[in-house]
Length: 450
Ligand code: ARG
Image (cartoon, rainbow, N blue to C red; front, side, top):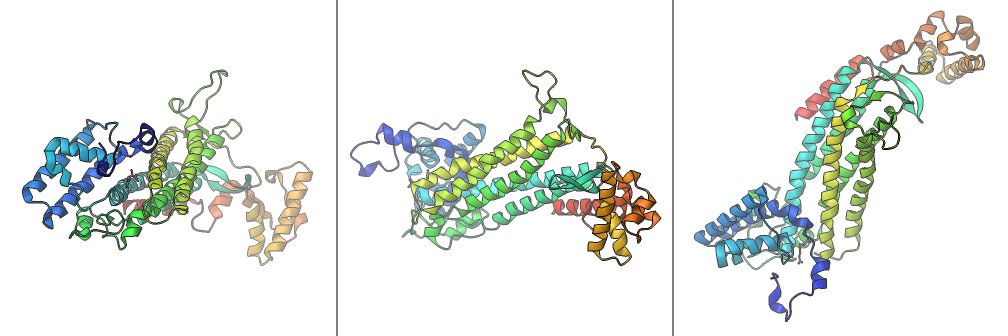
C-alpha cells in the first residue's frame, strides 16, 4: 500500500516499483523515528493531537525505535521508503491513530531532517575518531623524536629531520579534518515544517521541533529547506579530504614497507601474502585505503553533480544522495580504523638520512657571516660538484675542499654536515627538533581535549 494511492485508479507497475524503490535509506530508520517523536510532541503542544493520541503514537514510535535498534524492524517489499515503512508499522502497532503521524509533514521535509540528523551523528563520530588519530600520531611521534629521516621534496632527499616531525604532519591534517566536521555541525538547522515545499496552513511550530532535536533553529525558507543538499556535499567533502590525507599516508606506508625503503615492518597479522610468491608480505590495508579514496572523491562529485541542474524545490533525483553519503561515511570510518591498526603495530626502523641532507646548513654558516645567500648557495654547490666529481660524500670532505669552494668557510664548518648536528641546530618552530616536537605534541594534546 502506497502513502498516495487515493488519486490513482490502479496500483504501481512492477517496473515503476522496481526502478524507483531503494531501501538504502533503511540506514535512516532510527533518526527517522527520532524526528517523528519530536514532530508528534509538537503536534500535541499545538493541539493537533490530543494527549491520549500523542501517547499512543509516541509509545508506538518508541517500540519501533527499539525494534530498529535490535534489528527486528522488518522492511517489506511494499514499503516505498523508510518513511512509508515506519508509518505502515506504526499503524499496524497502534491502529488508526497512527494515520495522524504525517499531519503537517511531507516526506520532503522529513528526508531533509533525517539526513541532517544522520550527518550530525556521523560528523560527531568521525570528529572523535580523527582526534583519536591525531593522538595516536602524537604517541608514535614521542617514540621517534631521535629517529632521523630525510625530509623529501620532489621525492629527493632534502633536509635532515625526525620521524616524529613527519608523523606529526599527519596529526595536524587530522585535526583540521576534525575541525571541518565541527564546522558543519554549526550549520545544521531543522527543515521540519517546510512541508512538501511551501509550508502548511496548520499552526505548526518549527522552532519547537528544532529545539527538541537539539538543532540550531528552524529553516528560514521552506523551498531552500527541502531542495538543498549542500550539507550532504559538505559532509562528503570533509570525508573525502580526510580520506585524501589518509591516502597520502597510506601511500607512504606502502613505500616505506618496500625493501627499497625498508623504513618499517608491518605486523604479520596486518599484512597479506601472495598466492604465487612465497616471500611476499603485502601492505593491502594501506593499498585499499588509497584505493577507496577514489570512490570517496567520486561520491563527493556525485553529490555535487546531483544538485547542479535541479530546479527548486524537491526532486526525486535527491533520493540518489543516500548511497554516496553512506559510502563516503563508511570509507572514512574504515580507513581510520585500518591505518590506526597498521600504525600501532608497525615497527619503524628507517635508515639514516643520506649524506647530502645538511648542505643547507653549510650555506647558512656563510650567511651568518654576512655572505649573501645566493653566493653561499653557489659556494656549497661548488663543494658538492667537487665531491661528486671525485666520488666522495660530504663525510669525506676536507678543509681544503671547503676553502677551495669559498675562502670564507671555516674549518669548524665541516662538523655542520653531520645529520644529528644539522637537526639540533635548526632554529625554526614547527620543525623536527626535539623541542619543537614536544611543543607540537603538547599543542595537539591540548586541541584534542577541546
Ligand atoms: N525517498 C525519498 C528521498 O530519499 C524521500 C522523499 C520522497 N518524496 C516524495 N515526494 N516522493 O528523497
